[in-house]
Image (cartoon, rainbow, N blue to C red; front, side):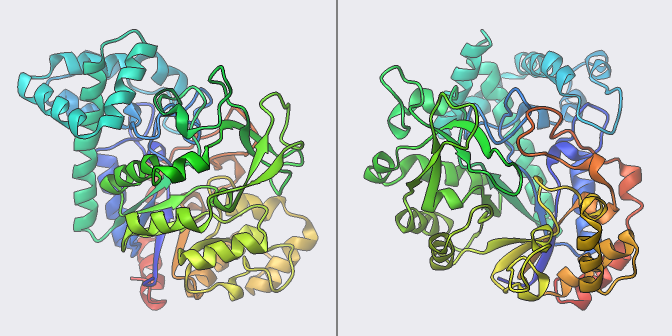
Length: 462
C-alpha cells in the first residue's frame, strides 16, 4: 500500500440548505478541500437506506442507495422540482440532519420529480434497473412498503447513480479516491431476506432463528444486540457466495475501495437468541473464514479492501487477517491504557494497516482526551511529547500518526477541526440521537489547509 492519508466524513455530514448533506456543490467543494490538504482518500459510511433509528448499518436493502443524498438543487435546475417545493425543503438548522422532516417530505418530493421526467430519462432509468436487478427488486419492495409504483423508485435510484458517477469523476480528476463501507449484516425486514431467504438462518415462519450482536466489550458491558438475521454460511458457500459477489460488484461501481464492517465475524460470529433482551447470553459460531476471504480477493483484484478487525480479537482472527493480506485497522483511542506492545499504539503500526484517530463509533479525539482519566491523560501527554494542553495533544496525535509506518492514516473531520464529544457520529448501543452531525462551510474554512498539506508532503503521504 502506497503511503497516503484521508478523511472520514459521511456524505450526510456535508453542508447545504436542505436538511442533510448530499451530492452536488458541497461534495465537490469537499473534494477540493481534500486535494488542497494533500489527502488522497475520502472515506464514508454506508450509502444505503437507513433504518428507523437513522443507522446505515441495518438497512432494508444491501444494494439500494439512500434517496436523501440525491442533489435536489440539480433537479430544480432541470425543472423537475419547483422553486416553491425547493423552498419548503430548507432546513431549520445547518448543524444537524433533520431526519424527521426528511421522512415527512423528501421521498414524496423525489417521486414528484420522477413523474415529471421526460420519456428519454425514464427510459434510461428503466435500462439502469434492468442492468441492476437487485436494485430493481429493492425498488419493488420499497414501493410495496409505501403503496407506490416502482417506476418512481427506479428513477430515484438511477438519479443517485448518475449524480454519484459525476462526483466520482470529479474526485478522480483531483486524485481523490472514494472509500465505501459494507455493513456485514442487513435488517430482518429487508428485501434481501424477502427475496433470498435461503441465504439466512430463518425458522419455519421465515423469522430469524438467531440474530447478530457482539459480546460485552469496550463499548458496552452488556454487549450489543444488533438483531440482524445471521447468514447461512453453508448455503452461501454452496453457490459460491453469489449474493456477496453481487454486493461487492455494486460497491465497486461506486467506490475505489471498501471497508468491510465487523470482519471479525468472518472468522467467528456472535449468535444470540432472537428472544434475548441483550447480547450477553450469545455464543460464538464458526464463520466462513479463508474460503470467503479468497472470494473477496477475486472480486477486489487490485482494489483496496480494509477489514474492520476491532473488538474481541483472538489469535484465529489475527491469523485470518494476516492470511487475507488486507490491511486491518488501528485506532489511537484503543492504545490507552494498554500494554506497550498494543498494536493500537503509534510506534507499533505496521505498513499494511489503516490507522484512525477514531472511528464513527468513537468519541472525537478532543472529546476522548477530555473524558479519559487524569492518569491516562498524563500517559498520553507523555507518549505524544505534548505540553499538558488537550488541543496541543490532539495536534500532536495527528502529526505522529502521519509520521508513522501506517500505509494509510484516516482522520474523522471532527478531529481535524478540534471538536468535542457533542459532534461525535455514533454512540454504540444507543438507539437514538446518532448519525446527525453536520459541518458548515464556514467551519471547514477554519482548517489550515496549507499546514496539513505541508505535513502530508513532509511525511510522504502525497
